[in-house]
Length: 86
Image (cartoon, rainbow, N blue to C red; front, side, top):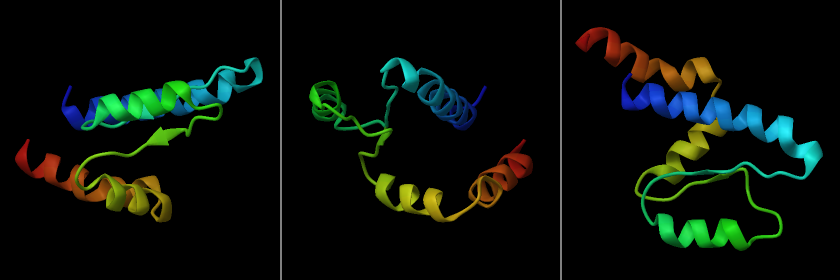
């Protein structure tokens, strides 16, 4: 399994878990790599943690693209690259 596949699996699983556990007062969050210590501390002490924390170089632009593009369009460049190099 590639890093990209692991990331998508983790994000999908965390989205499902967040929705399933919300009625029980359990928060599920995703913390992207880099500056992790600071973000973990913030997430752990927050009364209302965000669903996803974006940290590191390039995380903010990718987060913005993730919001405005469908999953299919967001995944297209990576899917095309994987097919080409596989």
